[in-house]
Image (cartoon, rainbow, N blue to C red; front, top):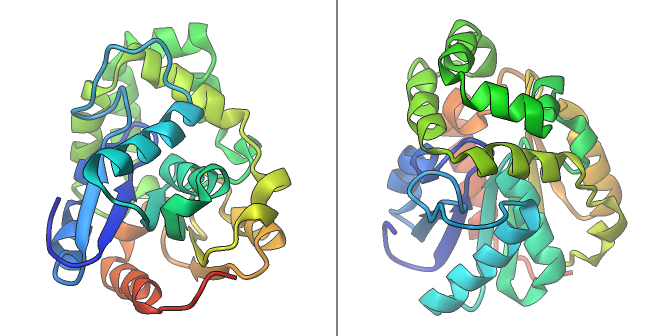
Length: 251
């Protein structure tokens, strides 16, 4: 937790952790009380569970808010975290004041072929037990993932703390997720932020979002990839704050 004021909850993506949000929390904490939690099996979270699917993370957000006495708050999610944010808005509408999704898949089939393969147990097992090769691959391709020179180091830290089960179960369930049939249930303000150079999730996922949530605000970043908060931090943070500051009522 960082800062004072009204609460805002930040949710990380696949193979990430709360550490992804450190700069965002430092800046946003001047105006809001920011929380960033780790999904089960990632970062510093509990690793002794039977399952690590998207629905578990949806329930986790509800439990997290219940335990901290947060009745309602904006949810800001990156990648898988954004998918979770929308799912919480669908299943626990009383919890969500606003929802922000950043490079998030609305339909799991929009994931890159590499991530889809990670969700298959035999392939996920092999990759997980040869993380040195996986780390080498994304270090070589780092400029295509993010313009931030520290990105690969952040990935090293978070990938090393991800459990085997979370490694393939979470992305396997995300691959099968399709929010489209229930998007019309979302009545709170929504903003989708997508980078045109995203190679992790198809950059056109803003289209099914706006088709299902007609009142959604879409922000496209022509020079950013999957990690918009790292690629274009000033514009990202100001756009996020403007959206959070706007006291527009639920639709």
